[in-house]
Image 1 (cartoon, rainbow, N blue to C red):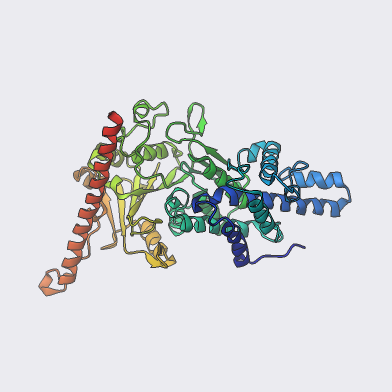
Image 2 (cartoon, rainbow, N blue to C red):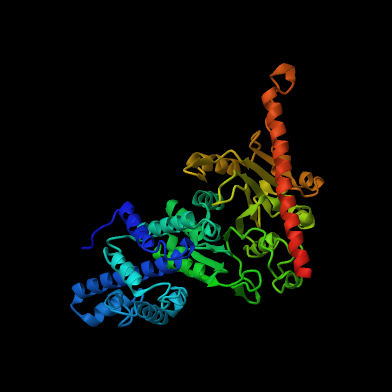
Length: 502
């Protein structure tokens, strides 16, 4: 029986491996080495566990091997113990084992170990690799020792630690999990549905959808999880993440979602029940010219400016929604709500009646960024009582900050979720606007235009009291500074466009 690790012991054990790399490389590069080793150790230990179970059951080595290979095949010479016994050229031994395992499991594991420079002894000398292998060899990562959910949680812990440690690269592969949990709750993924993330990162949003279905008592094995991720190593990490969480029906593809969408059916974009996304903010290097005649029909709202591709991702997501059940939650910068250069696209979006809710969030919910962001929720078919309406929620104050990090407490999530589900006015917090009313404002979706501080009519003979007046002034000022942030972003984009034209 394998020694059972507590969650704290597991996390300490996993982070101990990363500590062995300190001083040898940038913290942002840890993941290229730690995650493949963790995954390799897990595969080997589970294989051993199932081989022993088969052997105990029948005393037949051939049957035992077939049993172990049923989940993932590990060819001769490609087991953890084989690499551990290598006395030299450890990086080459690892690389050979990875390639052999991928080749033996092409449907699910091809490319999963990434493309780190294992044979570069200047970067990863034999001694360092041996230290890492011996560190991971201290404990079994069998299912008995570390069940799938616990290892998945440990994996998420590592992702967060790498985000904290690496700083400048954190936003590329980590989104605040309390916010992701809220977005998932708002969409209510159900048993048997398909979930898609077009900018999947390490798969955290897909995992959150999986966890939400489990939390509601549903069989998560009925879900189909799909994602595309630009960065190959990050896509590999997402695939490892899903396997370590026990997911069987998934497909993560490396590639550029805007230029080469991966999920196509009958010469059209495949559609999904649920889309969760945190697209890269305002990217400036993308093929705007090709978008104008997009073969997948994704330019139905228009062509975004070169300096920011937010509405390109937005339109891709809307086109990826199932026409009956489709719903999405997208994390965006506030600028998408009111930037002048996107006004025509935004007006068409409002007219389409796909937009259901605009949620404004507090500052500092993203690593190394003080910016406020918003979540935009759309549905292919809104409930009858929500058609022709848009709910605005101003949750700027629903945020906690501890140890230099911001997050949403359970009570924050409950209040926001409650307002979304109620879909009713809540003075100072939520406002239901009509599409006609929003179009009168030229489709401007800036939240302070709709959600105003409550008026205290009992004070001062019906006049606003000083506190209310100050709150109103503060709301107006906030809208001004949000607009100023967007102006700076727009000017930055204009410089980029000039450079592209030149």
